[in-house]
Structure formats: structure tokens, C-alpha cells
Amino acid sequence: MNNSKVVVRLGIDSGKNSFHLWGINAPDERVLKKKVRRSALLREVATLPPCLIGMEACGGAHHWAREFSQHGHEVRLMPPQFVKGYVKGNKNDYNDAEDICEAVGRPTMRFVSVKTVEQQDVPALHRIRQAAVKGRTALVNQIRGLLGEYGVVVPKEVGALRQALPVILEASSSPLSDFLRPR
Image (tube, rainbow, N blue to C red):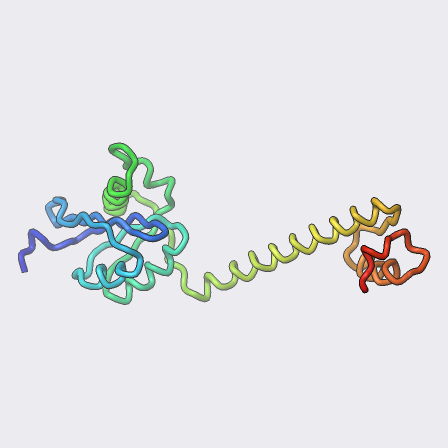
């Protein structure tokens, strides 16, 4: 194989549906500039000999890093704000991939550790739970506000609303119209 065409360092700018690749050889000459659809990315990277791959640490980056590592590549993720210092021209996807390729090769660059699936699971569960609690709080506050419009005041606690709501809905003396009561 001609070593002048071998990619030793690859920068990948990720997008929703397409990825831009920028690869350089040992003398730092561009040997790869390509746009790849999401469905073809793994196949494309798997065909390359093992090399250093740089990506910004953003959504999906940990997944791709794990996938690329299985094909013998060394993957390093960088916080996007650290890559900005390597911007040389106007912003476009190829320039971003080139900047990432440059940044990953710098000896002083700081990297983000690639997370395992298990390391991603725990924060994901916390975010889901936090969103559920936020949604529940919003719903409780909305119900309390609507009841307040009819002169019914319920304490802020979720438990207080859970206890009071069936009583309010079933009470014949409730100021709520039949339209708002369950049928």
C-alpha cells in the first residue's frame, strides 16, 4: 500500500444525517475529504487502516467512538469549545472536520473520556426521571391553578392534591360544573 495515501489522523464533523471526513497522512497532507451518510459511516471508517480519529464530544459521539474502537481505531473526543481555537476559515462542514483533525493532533489538547454504555445509562435515567418530575409538577400546578379559578384552594404538595382531587370531583357541593367532572 502506498504510505503517502494512508490516513493516519481523521477528523469527523458529525451532523444529523451526514458526516464530513477529513483525513491526513504522516506528512500532514490531506488524503481524504468526503461526505458520508449516517448509514455508511461505520462501513467507511472500518475500511481505513487503524488511525487516530477526532470528534467533538456531542450527541452520539460516545456511540461512534465505541464503534470505531472495535475496528482498531484510537478515538479521542474533544469539547467543542476547545476545537474553536483551530478554526482557520469560514465555517462549513469540511472546514469543521479539518479543524477537528488539526485539534486532535495537538499535544496540549484536552480530551473527554469515551463513556461505556453503562456510564451513559445512569445519567440518562436521571434525566428521564427529572423530566418526569418536572412534568408532574407542571401538571399539579396547572390543576391547582384551574381549581383556584373556581375558588377551590389546594396546598402545593402533590400528596395533598392526590387526596383532595377525588373528594372535590365527587362532592355535590363542589363549585365545578358537570363539564369538568368525570362522567
